[in-house]
Image (cartoon, rainbow, N blue to C red; front, side):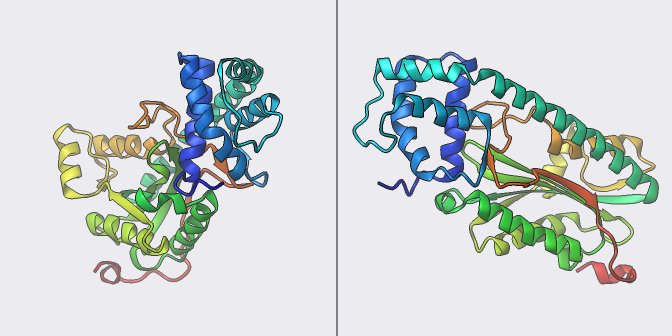
Length: 311
């Protein structure tokens, strides 16, 4: 039996939410039974031991396995008794889940410190920096076609373009990418691109160009949100928090706004708009897959004249 329209990200994210509701929330046992009936077989049929899953997912799989005599049974019913057994087994995994959550929180705090240090060093090196923020994601309808392996493949291509500093990445001096997983939004990335302000200045165009590059890389499966769109910038400027676009190091408030905006990438308090939950971490990834990368983009050739960088 197959489940073609339950995409990998949604399945994993829903299981993560269920486990957290059982262990840390308030959920009726009848609702747990309903969710188990929907989620158990899809996970069993799609579980890939080559992938690395969050403790919540592993706890779900191990706890259901304790209850089920035949893991692939199509006739098994999750009634009151079996659901209670599942919950009891699940409780034994609570400490490992809490430990992992704390570890992720510490890691994000370290990422924030490193990112802020990098940004302040960048402002010492350049009098003006052009900050561009783009959110990259996948379209909802074909999302069931996208796996975590596809995401890594697409990001590898994107990073190759960034490293080559061609087209919309010319003049780039720094970049940071945070990979996340939302309940409805699926796999997505927050991208920070910082250009030498002496070489580049059309930030709205650059945000759009990067988004279109993502659409091309994903063969039309992907889409984007250009944070540097004029309407967005006007809204931030109105309330005094504009931290994208051209930032002069002599404007202390603008510098602080830019750093605060950039640190959103490593903010552990980001909330999923659909579930109102704080957790946006990846619940499944490939071995050695980095969920946050940052770094200076080095020049591979001599600096060109300023005019050659802009359309």
